[in-house]
Image 1 (cartoon, rainbow, N blue to C red):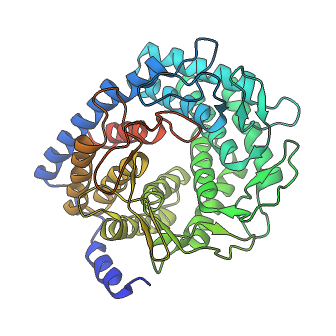
Image 2 (image 1 turned 135 degrees about the horizontal axis):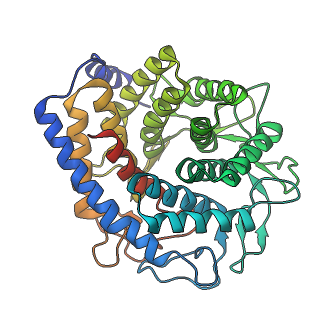
Length: 412
């Protein structure tokens, strides 16, 4: 049971004017933070993926071991490959390095040639190592990332094939996965888009990343129907998924949004805090933007109060009374961004200080200075799991590279 009195008192401290401007001290701190994070992005994260991820036989390896060597014969995941399209495309758009243009085009071409279902539309879930289809189900989460990656490739390169395919996948999701009665998007389908019976037909994670995909697609395709759907998805996330009493998202749902489990996922909650504002900014509705900013500051404040480990780093989740205090790589990147976003909204330097403390913890505990990239997990006692893979369907450059790109964009 959460102590709502403590939460309320904590949020009152966060409810400050959004019109404050950063102090000179704050600007100097932020610029130093930017220098260090961008150095890690351009000198560590991106070079690791550029060097190790391309598969000599085409596309990208399905699994990379802790030292960057490939696991031969491993399946190739659609989520990983869509995120590679996004990462290399963004790297080219922001850094203007021809290496990343080549890698972005390589990732896009392989994705279009191998992951896209030419008969039924949408994206396959996994391929065999040789590029032939393996699991041909249509997973909404996976297809959201296909939209996200391909829309970013178009944004960076103006390649029409990427935009046309992204729009096609969006239309399939609208036709088959969108719940026109209760709102939001359903989880999973067969290859020909027949619903799959699953325990939780809707989840926070899928709907969060559909929001992200709609946001990025709307940046490059100003379609009226897409705009209306983006608005509806923002509303779903604020009022169906988010519990504004506890300031945590609910994770697993029935079709009518009945919550199934009591789980607080700190990394997802602080990631949601800034993705929600990003969606509202793209939408361009000032009233909705103000509401998302209020939510973002409250979310960041509660995750810092409840989710940070006493020795540093954002913990994974709490289910009932059980606390999983592992520190996976991705919540650490999202914590830096969520805190930076809350600081830029509120002007409250405590959020900038929290971002700096989190980055200091990452520098000390999570960056792999022997083989490159970051460790995938740090145990509760502070020991990194050095033998965890650096790439698979769920391990990717998306979270920590995006942190670097966002810091570059936000701090001038």
